[in-house]
Image (cartoon, rainbow, N blue to C red; front, side, top):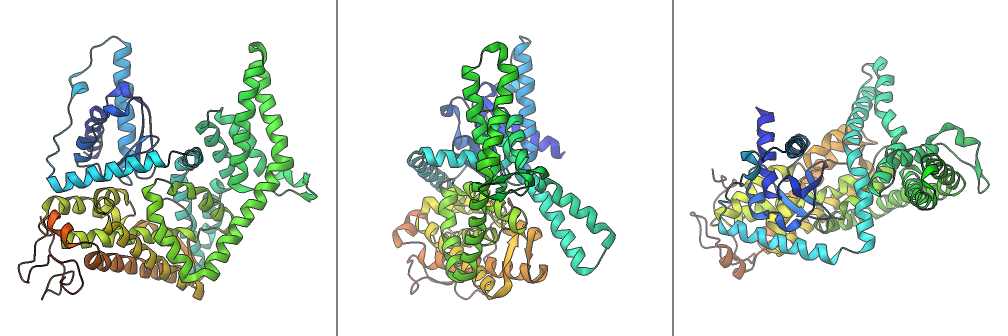
Length: 521
């Protein structure tokens, strides 16, 4: 039954993105279906957003359809199977099936939600055009290298967390070595996977990228001396592997241009591996090692000395990075910290931005009691928001409204400040993997004071982010004009609430009410 549901979602998406002929690649990350399209103008974004399974649509270098964790991993192969099946029919000369021209369902969305969606799309398009600079495009492509690795990072991170908990409790000591091998095996070869996907992303031969990156983790490099120091296996981490694979792509392209066709199959791989391998051993590994060490030292210093201020800045600025689609450029930094320290202390702080966004959305829901369409959008996107999928709420609610986006950032800043302050006081926490956020991050938490304290610190930050985002948005997120335009109305048990000032606005649950308003069914 579940497979039928995901197949139906794929069938509904296909005609709304221009059909099989318009799709040249299908991929996915933790939450988004990423489609490479030949003609963007064929996408019916309005109908796409109206699909029940779709939480949002993001225009980037690919068409990104937000489906949420778990769902996207099931819809992507169904869509790929549809594409493969229909292309086979076309190759056999068969006429398209009746489903090939199927139209997506009508939107049925109310005017308020449609207006916000259009504003969000316009803001995204403007930001995308403004930020399509060469440097930022390269950053996005580097981020794409790490996206396919996230599921393995999550799985190994959770196993590492379970192993740590069992070890601390003194349970199943005979199982600990096995769990250590399972959780550490992938991490010990992470550089190879990074090299493979780097070459694939930048147009080289993937296995050559993996081959040159494997040099960095080979135990025998300890016998190689560079800049007066003996190298260490793994020195430079993912940054060294990334640099080596990028160089391999350039060397391979040069070699194919100058090499005679008869010799290309033998000499190009050899030249690529030899030249890049030597450059990696006698230059890149040392330099990348210094950069990786600097990242670890800077992150540790920033959080140990900056405390609340550092947490406030990081938590408050992360939502704008998500808005611009640049947040994935942080993945190499997170991965480097996990390799060096076993966890990244940055991720729990950055996750507070999602808490501020959730609190903001709840405030908008309570404030706009007369706007059924916006409330329906929030109800559908809020569960994903609690799990750290923020794009539907950002582009569908807070960003188009303007002021609520600022108050959501304030909620993230306050939540980050709490986590940063408690970390400075000795209760620092980190995440053993990247990918999840919100409530989904709890299984990946680690800290020097144990899992219980780590969970309590993270929960304190989330609650602060929720509360600050809610209260700041409720009292300061709307002007009188905005409330009039959005059709806000007063609760039945109190006076009119058309003003947005603290003096005139009732509490979040309405005058005389000590519990939240019951959501509409």
